[in-house]
View (cartoon, rainbow, N blue to C red):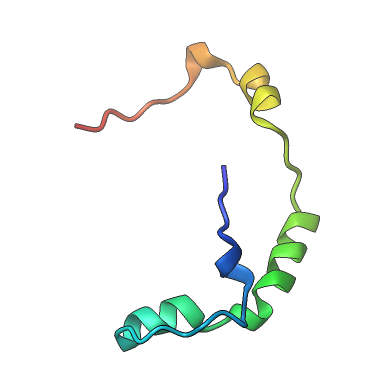
Length: 67
């Protein structure tokens, strides 16, 4: 499952005054992000959740217990 926020692809968004490390994570690479996303979409097959649920063998799925 993947999630992308629109700001992940908007190089024209306002640049906030935040610490340098946060600014780097938030703004560096935005100009090429949409191209990378389109390439990623083209090279992968996606299905909706209903189809995924139907093909999973729920009896043998590996689970991790988190406390």
